Length: 407
Image (cartoon, rainbow, N blue to C red):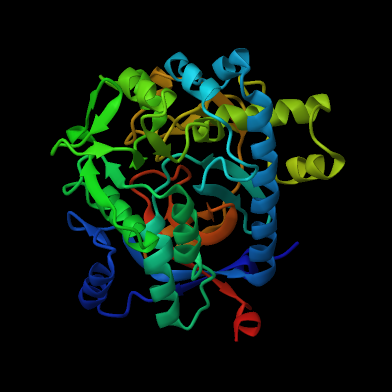
């Protein structure tokens, strides 16, 4: 087995004066390195072995194809929509809207992996609907890695984003509390800037709908919109059914597209695992990838060892609970919103994340991989407790050994 220290090397940069570095990142567009006197950005680099990175890239490409295939199997099957927790208000929209071409159900997504100290890679979840972390990955990570003399593989993220949006051509990007929520506002501003298009940024709370036509606070009609707005909230928000109707009738093109909610549901991972166990749908090669990288995931707690429960539409660690080998609750997220009150729960075998020694002590390292325009293209690191939630730190991820290939 590869020793843990060979998979990730922690390079501490906290001896450098923080304030001017935070200011430099602010000027680049990463304005929330410090939040309310809390240090969200950890001034360090976690460096991954080249071989592990290459396997992670290949795993991401393979799993992307497998999950795409699973969405196409689920499409138009209302019993499976229900099993995945898709709110019924969205079913007509999913049925009426055509599926995108293979590999492009979502053009802007992020896998979250547990990469263990020995290099074992396991998929935790896929955010195929409204992933954040884009600024950290595409802007901050390359800058931090360059300063430390480490190669970042994230340099192509902007080009992939521009290629994706050259096809989708949104005229508007939106988030909730635009202008006051730093992370979401900064994220949509960076996406708009990197697209190279003339796009207006707006607040979702200023939008209104008139007979299916979506308008902003200045009565400007919106026809093509990217929104950091989770689609499942159409089932509970006032006006959600009107928004779904706008999409169903073609008056609004929403990005990521409607079917990204099927990819987003953690129930899809349970469905893939169930079909794997039953010998359905997947080829021998795909079954090998599922066995290697997907954790046993079910709609019921059937484990005799440590496992995790989470809502099919949980975000930022909300709803996550970890149980020990005896089935007793060991730890739960108490900061994020527990969406298991609204949506079904899945149960997944617990996976080990690599642990890194930092000035704050030993932290668990979560590894994200962006998939933009169908291409795995950007690492995102988060360091914190066993559950990666809002209290976790952003840490730049670099790769050791790519220097030979890139220079």
